[in-house]
Length: 241
Image (cartoon, rainbow, N blue to C red; front, side, top):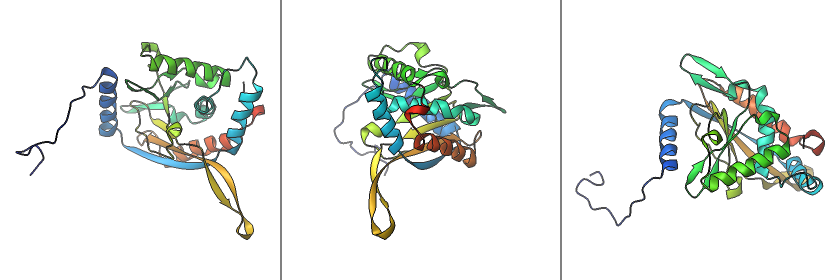
């Protein structure tokens, strides 16, 4: 017998959805219902990335704001994404729109629910500009002060759950975008060497979920491969501060 058909529910209380959660529920239902999605994951050596982040924080000086790891992800994705236009696109009926700028939505957890303020023209930003814009947008999000311009025009979404201790996850594509990147935590693993020795390495798992009407597995793999190369080749000399 189905629950509720003549059965008594255990004690419960009702939580009404606020506007943010209603919008999220509607968009995620639309995502599952209308988008044929697939995902591809890759694991990257994050040692150079973390060393560079520490160098930026210690050598940047007063002109460089406090740079979070998420800000560095915003910067790197902004640099890599223009080389993969199908990931920075949307399906529009019988055609695909390829965007000429990267408007990067960044998922932010707030007391009112998950919101995604947009960092506009991310490909043009220096790391310090990306960090400052992200900090300001995240602050407005947590205070419930986002404007329509803060959450409109996104062409790609970044969701970083690493700060919550999540190793990897598969995000849902945020319609009408063609792809979303899920970033897990940077964790330490043991690398096997000759003669049975091991050494610790820092790794991170990246997962791209994509609209199969726009991208195929090879497209996703090429994007992740370029992002992996950017992570593993990350250095202070290659970053525009």
